Image 1 (cartoon, rainbow, N blue to C red):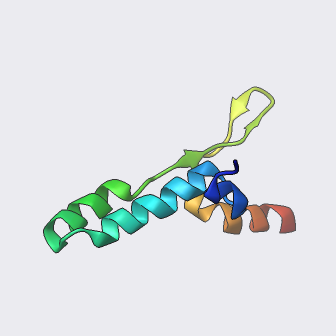
Image 2: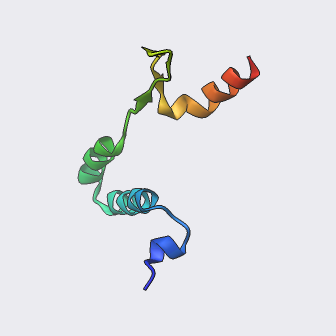
Image 3: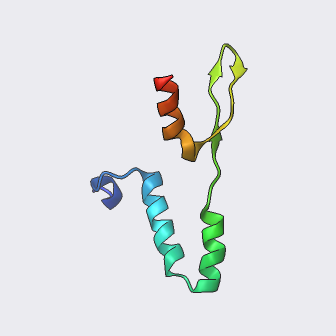
Length: 72
């Protein structure tokens, strides 16, 4: 038996993101606002080169920063 999210071509993390968003949107306004604030993430990453940590970048900006690094 295949899970529905797997058959749809989603990863488990993506499935959880979609399900969580659907639940948050179904709540009443006061509860929904508080739940949406908890749903926001601020993830940062940094590239290590030669044993030294590079500049920490926001993951949401990663596609634009990767494009500027490859063009430079």
